[in-house]
Length: 177
Image 1 (cartoon, rainbow, N blue to C red):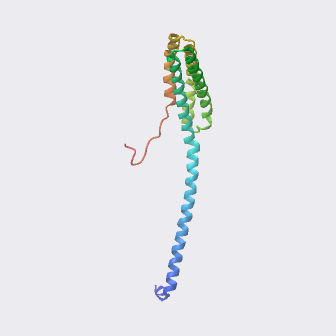
Image 2 (cartoon, rainbow, N blue to C red):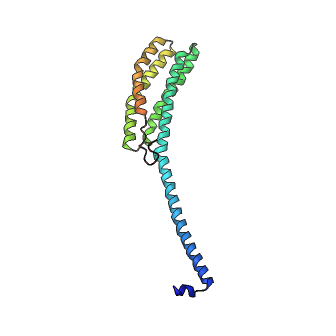
Image 3 (cartoon, one colour):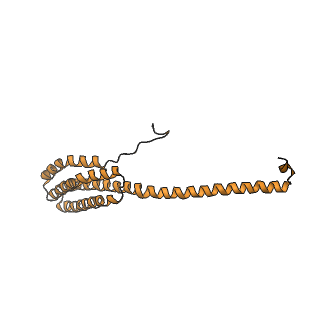
């Protein structure tokens, strides 16, 4: 250790700052690499998971709008109002089918694909019955439309159950909330 004591103050300062600069460079390279990896993971999270959840949420919204549209058709007093509401409901039902057709590209895990398949099993029957009820309501056949809706309630329950997204188990210190 005597060799260090024999060094001049200027040499000691320069070597200290050089060591500090080297450590700073190592930390910055490591941090930059970690940030690039985080950016890649964020992109993966967005592409693989959030887009799918958003698409499923959009489908859920379209399903609710279609159901609400049939209700509005049933409640309309004037024939022209019923025609307008029925046309709007038909568009909602087309949107449901379009949105359901676009979900394949977003769901990649086996669980998600299974949920999508379950939803697709119940969707056509529900769309058909809701369309029938809408057409009957547009024609002013309210009692018949209500009868069709009663038979479609079980289909709607199956559809809603199939659309439920199971959240992953929480882990860590906040898991027992």
